[in-house]
Image: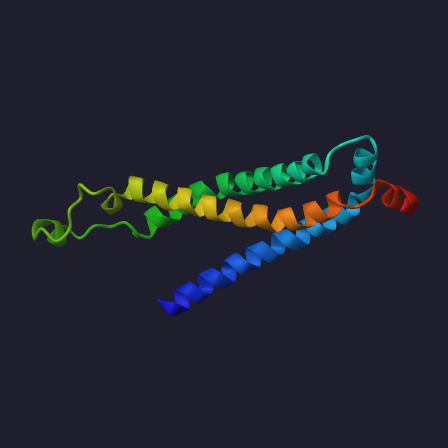
Amino acid sequence: MRLQSALIGFALLSIFLGMLGTFWMRCNARRAEIGLMRSMGAPKRNITNRCLLEAAILTTIAFVLIVPIMYLYADANGFYVIDEKLVENGQLNIDYPQNRFGSHFALVTIITYVVLLGISLLGTYIPATLAARMQPADVLKDE
């Protein structure tokens, strides 16, 4: 259990650092655009929200593309095979949603999506706010 928790933590940290690095580079590459937006009167919150929306869209597209593959993998490898002896003995009640394939898969998928979206938004928020704080004159002077 500790090994699984450590691996999950490492995977989530890797996702966070990947999003942080990706959006750090994207914000630096778009310095002129951000400076122009700021000089035209765009508030800092607007710039930050645009970056967060972009991260949410990318995360959602990636997740939507992988869900059918996860479903087929779980179904093909028998992750949700119920032992009939447990049901007959009364040790397993299939009336509970967590003991049925569809409802359990949907719940785990939703929880996973929310966690990944939160981590990606947190990893995007840091470089987006730093980019929005730049003074327009300094950015446009460099360009």
